Length: 152
Image (tube, one colour):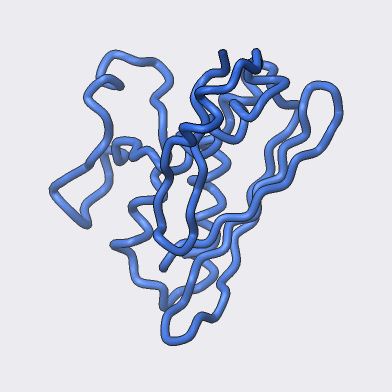
């Protein structure tokens, strides 16, 4: 039986369990199955607690289970929803930094050789959308690319 798989839906701006995948008899692990993309989604879409110098809101979010963890899960991408998009360069630089930081554990644990995230704005109908391109070079040198779009 496979581990669970998350699928990201850009239209709804959400991730959901792929129940058809869970019910399959496929045996996979993080290096050979879709668990890698699930790990990326969890890492990017889970809220990491804000740094001590975060002053924009009283709520620093995060997961209570990280209180004793040396390496917290999730990303600080949630902070972008509070920051203004007027300073485009700083906004995109933060997005890339938050995403790269959230995925660094894949390199630290030897799942990937490298992780690279590039942020850009995509003009939507009336709103700006943040595009995040994620490139993973796996331990076997194969390259995986994913793109995520969020309302900015």
